[in-house]
Image 1 (cartoon, rainbow, N blue to C red):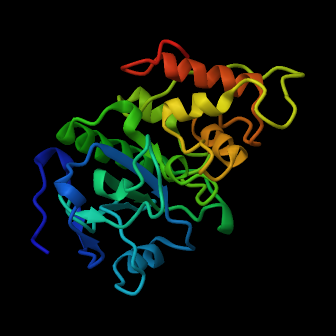
Image 2 (image 1 turned 90 degrees about the vertical axis):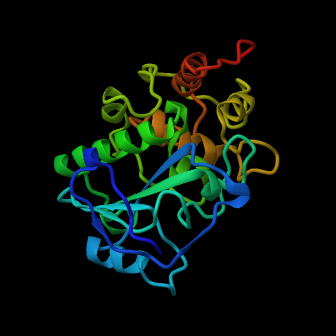
Length: 251
């Protein structure tokens, strides 16, 4: 692996090369940014795992709790971070994305708030990546968005609103939750085609509707994450669709 080259506005970045990478299929250029949490007991353990050839996983960057940024795979290469995934019909998210692992114990080990210094570092790192590659806001996603039912990171505590305020990612204010908004199981408001229109794997071959709604809520309506297609969830999704750069007017 060649020595990584960094732009001056990235600040201090430590390099620890991971052997777990390959070529982007079809020579694709990255147009997506996928954020993860490490879900391990420590940042050191996570960094060692991402650098271990036996793990068969990696990310382009790792951000420690104190804000230290480590580059593990060059941006031009295909890191192995998203795994089995889907977005807007594409099932090879790794070939078109840059992956950032954010140190956090995750739901299995006492899910914690993301420290301020860490979030500041993530925002600075994401800002540079988005600018370098001209990434659209709606293609800055969480692992759970591209792998619903299989992954739940970076989770409902991740500050997507704060990233959006810094010019990173797509966001609208979630619709208010009102008493009696819960709806019966199923798809009464036709939420499946709306989720598909936004990009989620909500078709017949997907993981099922509830885990997709759960993933959507983690990202865009985190105050209540239950996988139920209530009115607040549906309205928030409609607002997001209307705010897309190319909005599907029929929806």
